[in-house]
Every structure is written in C-alpha cells, then in structure tokens.
Length: 228
Image 1 (cartoon, rainbow, N blue to C red):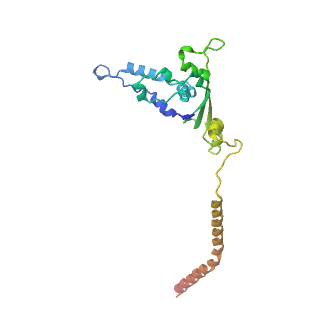
Image 2: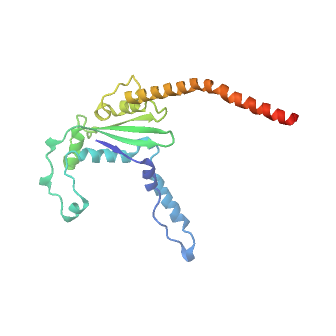
Image 3: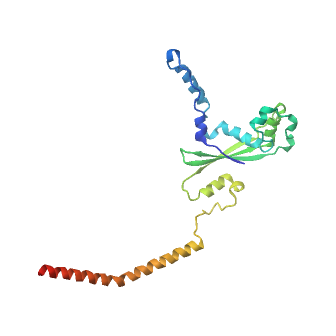
C-alpha cells in the first residue's frame, strides 16, 4: 500500500486556527494569542523528516489490511462488537510506503514502514501487551526514508524505482537510463521529409539565373532611361 501526503497542506493545518477573543473594550488579547502560538509551535516537529504524524498514518495503513472499513455513520449508530474483530492470528507483518514532496530541496521523499505482527497485536488487545525477553514492550515498528532528487529529469524513473522497489515500480534496469524513442513510422516520415527538403534545395540554383537575368535587364533599362 502506498500513500501520498501533502506536507504543505499538513503544515498549514497546524497553524493556529482558533480565533482569540478580544480583551476589554476591543483591545487585542496578546497574552492569549502568544499562548496559542506557543501551542501551535509544539505541534511542529523539530525534524520534518521524523514527523510523528507519519507514524500514525503508517499504523492506520497497517490496520486497514486486517480490520473492516467502517464509515463515520456506522460508528455513530452502533458500537463495534468485540466478536466482529478479526482474530490476532490473522495479523501479519506488513510493508508500507508513503510519498511526500519537499519543495525546499525539490525532491521526493519515500518513507518505508515495516510493521510487525507483534506490534499490531499490542493495539489489537492493549490490555495484553506482549513483553520481550528483557521485559520491555516489543517495538516492531521501523521507518526508513530515502530522498529522491527531481533533477535531472532523465533517470528519475530509475531513482524512484530504487526507492520504492520492484513491488511498486515494476521491473526496470537500474543501471540503464530509459529514454524516449521514436516509433518506426515517425522515423520513416522524418527521413522522407528530410529527403524532400534536400531535393528542393538542390532545385533552387537552376531557377536562380533566370531571376538574376531579370534583375540585370531591369537595371540595364533603368540606366538607359537615366542616360536619355
């Protein structure tokens, strides 16, 4: 499963959208406005490439492989019965990918998430989290990312293919850059046009003396009129 996230839209949604009420007599309520800005800055990660929002999206994508898709209307009408949940034995390790676009560096960023079955079991039954041998909770969640420059345009398919892998990009030769080639009919038509153009250029010198003779006759007539 592959997902695309617009990071510009995500950043705009984190801006303080709540309206701060004015103070007495319509004066600006600057203390509350500053508190709102501080709270909004806490939502912005220090490293954009390690955004916690991506981890939540990866978890939702992984769970969508095993749980039924319910609309908001269905969840409001009734509570989900525990018997409708799939058994934990049906959970499996999944590999997921998210594509984003970094405007500052003009590059695609491909995130690859590896979610294990044990990690999904923790959310399947949170009251029975499986501890590992050391007594701590199993992580089982790994995220990697690769930056793919947009330029040069030639070779972009191969660079994206290396980041996504053959499961998404299909079969391709990473060592040979793919270029556009003309179809046989187009190349044949282009050759014929070039032949016609060359033949027309060769015929022009035969017509040139006639035009030159006319110009000489006109110039001789004009000089004769001036002499008279």
